[in-house]
Amino acid sequence: MSQLLTGVPASPGIAIAKAYRLEAEESIPQQRKVDDPAAEKQRLRSAVDAAKADIDRIRETTLERLGPQKAEIFEAHLFLLDDPDLIDTTLDQIESEGVNAEYALHEVASSIIEALQSMDNEMLRERAADVKDITGRVISKLEGREHSALSELSAETILIAKDLTPSDTAQLNLEFVRGFVTEIGSRTSHSAIMARSLELAAVVGTGADASGIRTGDMIILDATAGQVIVNPSDEQLREYSVRKAEYEEYKTRMRSYVDRPSVTADGVQVELASNIGGIDDLEKVLANGADGIGLFRTEFLYMGRSSFPSEEEQYSVYKHVLEKMNGKRVVIRTLDIGGDKELPYLQLPKEMNPFLGQRAIRLCLDKEDLFRTQLRALLRASMHGKLAIMFPMIAVLGELREAKRILAEERAKLEQEGTKVSDTLEVGIMIEIPAAAIAADVLAKEVDFFSIGTNDLIQYTMAADRMNESVAYLYQPHHPSILRLVQLVIQAANRHGKWAGMCGEMAGDSAAIPLLLGLGLYEFSMSASSVLPARELISRLSREEWAGLAEQAIGMSTQQEVLDFVNQQLRSEA
Ligand code: PEP
Ligand code: MG
Image (tube, rainbow, N blue to C red; front, side, top):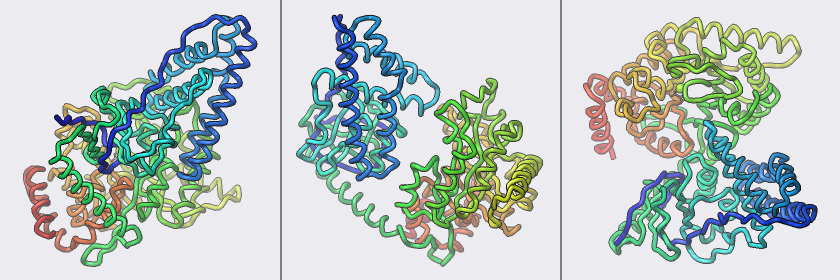
């Protein structure tokens, strides 16, 4: 009997192969008393050195295979192996308690891991995996075991594991590994991120369901749907062989759009840009031929650390992104913290309604020093490419004017100091609050562009918390009330000769793109992997025709009516 498991679709693809179960090496070291703590401490130091040599080798291979950004994680691992909190504390414990090195290291690491895992911040929780990875490696050395034999697989395989450490993932032999399934993990775990850059099919977070899979079981991995079929029937095997071939054909077809312009069937040029959270995402943006960056969420620069990033640090990141994009437009959003994103070191008071509280521009206007540092870094970086600065969560004109006043002051200061600032720098705002959408004609006069943040615009329009599953049914991008607001914004921008973009999830939704195009949207910013499918779709659409169809959709009564209408039109055009 075949068995169906579901998990998080972490990296798309379809694979069919036999399972190889990677057994967790989580043996808990036994405590032993040692007679000579000094010798035991030396044993630990030698094991740490041997582990460092291994990691250095993995770092080199990763550098060659995946480039410097992916190799950085192993620099962090080397750094951790020098961390006094881990190593010195372990050495002290060996000395004071007279216990064996593997036991002391396991004890010290466990308390660090536990502390990290209890953090609110997802990035810090991920650090726990790094500490686990390196201590596992050192303990293997102490116990005289080989850490893992992943690089030695020799037949087509789908890897099954409780979890894969970053070093496991980096060592996968891509000649044979066709994909992996892990019991724990999320879309943002290191293994998921690595899988996406290796273009390896992966489903993570299946829970204990995958623990029953044995080496040698036949597996169909449909990572596009987040499904794993264990010991499939002949019929399922036939069906998925066809799907796999279709998927591969689809990918090849999409790749042919990498260097093509983003133009509709009736010759209207649009911009298909990408959203990023940091420089690690650039590789994918470039590989997918995006026309620019429509949203750089800079808050990630501030998260997962214990103090603010300096002006210099921010400047070098912004400069790097602008240079990499080589003259294509880069929209950098100023700090959008608050709501679901916290900064522990900022020590903000708890709010009753964080999404309606002091987030984004509201916070920046209150904490001017913080804002000014970021603006200076941005202004300086503007000389290195085509920069657009974007203020988030603008509700009223006064906020925009205040933000622009501070920006102008910092610009004047820099110029007085002899620092050049670009003359072509654009300044725009996100439209994500209904008040701003309704008054877009007023705001349009004082900006260079709008970018519609539908993730928030929908939550505020529907009064439905975007994090609350029980009201998720109200997240309706295709609802006529949302389309009407979007239309107001686009019309206001176009009437004033400004461009209108969208950087909420809706911009990459294939059932929304035709309507947005018809409404006159110019820039669509989405995750990098959506760019090529969007470009292919746009190339089949006529803007003129969809202008009429979008008008009809706006007059409808429900989201379902709109969706049925769009899908039927797309089918009849195919
Ligand atoms: C949005 O609100 O649509 C948006 C793009 O911003 P974020 O998702 O970062 O709030
Ligand atoms: Mg938002």
